Amino acid sequence: MIIKNARIIDPASGLDDILDIEIESGLIKKIGKIDGDADIDAEGLVLSPGLIDVHVHFRDPGATEKEDMDSGSKSAAAGGYTSVICMANTKPILDDLEGIEYFLGKAKKSLIHLYTIAALTEGFNGDRLTAMEELVEAGCVGFSDDGIPNVDSSIILDGMIRAKELDVPISFHEEDPLLNKENGINHGLVSQELGYYGAPSVSEDIMVARDCALALYTGAKINIQHMSSGEAVDIIRFYKQKGAKVTAEVTPHHFSMTEDLVLKKGTLAKMNPPLRTEKDRQMIIEGLKDGTIEIIATDHAPHTKEEKERDFLKAPSGIIGLETALSLGITYLVKKGKLSLIELLEKMTINPAKLYNFKAGRLEIGYPADLVIFSEDEEYIVGDFKSKSSNSPFIGEKLFGVVKYTIVDGKIVYSSIK
Image (cartoon, rainbow, N blue to C red; front, side, top):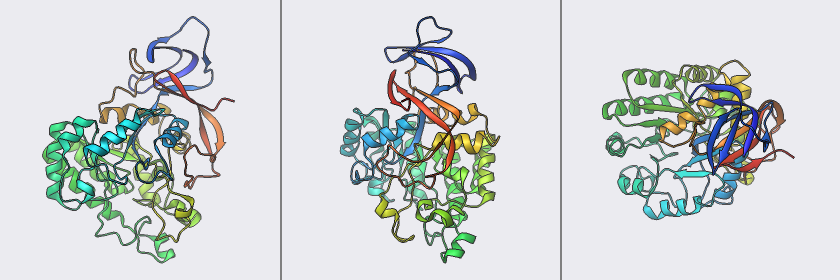
């Protein structure tokens, strides 16, 4: 395959130029000016490494009416993603060899590259670590009890020591369950208006501080998931300066929206951790700008229409995000002058690849031809998802950035070209 006349952006090397790219046997063969007819004329379009998401929920096994590996992969491909990492909060929880082998067996049939982490503790019980060495050998790429914050510091310390030996990260959902009264809504003006106490930002801050301190102490690699608190950004910045191996991720909804969205969208804007204040949002954007927050991840969390139509307290938290992430980044960061396009793509390609030591996220001769081609300036109205679910608060919103092709191992797995 030959792709011509693209604006090729490779954050890993700093390349940003109008060039051609040749693919052979699923690998990048040449980047430059190439003779021969074009299979894809990408004039006016951006070509970058395929996007990588370190935080998705594909609900397989156990809740495949919401999403499964096939539909999740199609949703990812439509969003420009060529690699994603699934969380372990399935039914049953992925905490043993049988579960990891089940996942990896099905993942082989996927349109894109599917990876999984394993549970840090057995059954997410918080008091007994899984057979971490065995699970890494079987193919999991890290550990997390995502969705179930653990207040037992001794277990977390032991887990970090073992994870360091295995050279894999542990990812943390940072909310102290003892401080949250109602999950999914920030403790503040909106929660007061609706008659709830909610989840205070300090719940996130103290857990982030603990885990950063333990990471500094152990030398382990950790990932702070879906940041929402501005004060927590400052805490991470401090510990990174001290030398802690801390990576932080933020979702597009947390850098785009505030708690006010709950008043407009109700349960479609309910997520853990919740949307917070404009001050928090601006501090998150500053963290993105100065590199404190290195990764943008979706926390793609499908739920059925019936579940999201329940009373606010009974409805599950979470929204889908794979098909809107790139466009939210372009619309709310690039078009607003907060990040350049190459800086945005860095947080969606090479940085997540580095965290997990993937051979991905860069345009280099001999690397897998995992690519996304998109129009930066074209607008569209959000809707018509490839996901099985449609629990997005962005439905009907006009955004910039339309994916034209997603290519995995040199094969087109998604195209919006009619």
